[in-house]
Amino acid sequence: MALPDYAGDVAAALATAGVGTVGTGIFIGPTRAPATGLPAVAVFVLPTGAGPPVAPYLGTSTDWHEVALQILVRSAANSYAAGRTKAAACRTALHRLALGASYTLCMVRETEALYLGRNELGHHEFAINVRVGFDAA
Image (cartoon, rainbow, N blue to C red; front, side, top):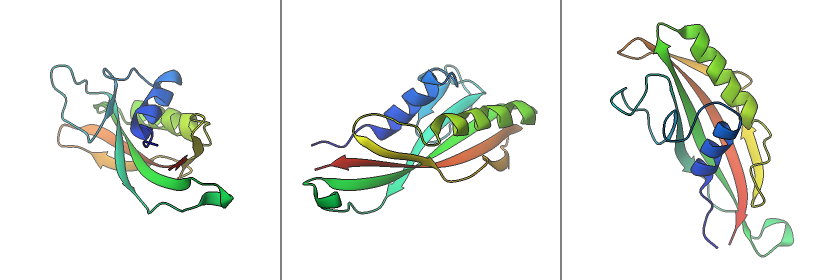
């Protein structure tokens, strides 16, 4: 069994929650500077690692995997409040979310988004760390 597209599934869940649209406001991968086709206000879903699989999981024939993702939220320049609001919406959308049939866990690690400060262009940045668990062979 192939591993699920957990970054894509988390991005799609954020879009379903109304945070943005995948490809125009929500992106998979590290943050990138605003440019043509990449807006100043954006959300990035970044896979950041995984532990080893646990096998077999609860007596089944499948392994249990847990991966980490970081949701990075960038506000418009000089707009701390709007960035914080968008980060809170991301956190609310993902905490304890039922992602799909193959997922067993989606848990946000912080009670509130982490403020990372301003980037070189004056945009406020926030982070939400997420754990996602799933069964796979």
